[in-house]
Structure formats: C-alpha cells, structure tokens
Image (cartoon, rainbow, N blue to C red; front, side, top):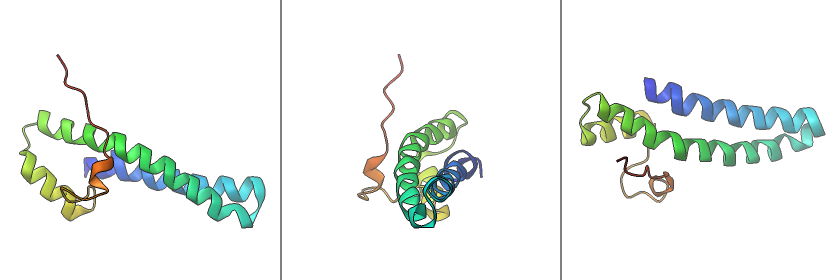
Length: 95
C-alpha cells in the first residue's frame, strides 16, 4: 500500500498534469503531447522512487524476494530481468 502511495500515485498525477497542461496551454490537440511528456517525467519519478521504496521495506525487516514478488503481483514493479526493471536508478552504498 505504501509503495503505491509514494510511487504510483505520483506517477498518475504527473501523467494527468501533463495532459492537463497540454490542453490548458495549447488546446485539445496538445493533450496527447502533454501526456507523452508526462509519461517521460513519470517514468523518471518511478525509476527514482522504486529503489527508495525497496530500501524503505528492507529497513523495516521485509524479505527482499517476497517484497519483489509482492511488488510484481501488485503492479508496482516489473519482474526481475525485465527491460523495464533495468530502468530503476540504483542507490549508491551508504557508508
């Protein structure tokens, strides 16, 4: 639930805002263009937010494999090895 609130909810809001801005600034013909740019920005958000969600779950004692499985089943993350899964930004090791 937490992952969907901090990852997917902003993704949907960013895409919706992109569509709205395209429409509001340039008219209905630009709605799709705004959506396209919204998808790009939303993907960047997703790529940065998912690793932080994983880290958040691990600090609370979650099992890494179970977290991945639950994330895939709920549509939060892509399956391991997926082309899309490889777009996640990696978190540098903290010292």
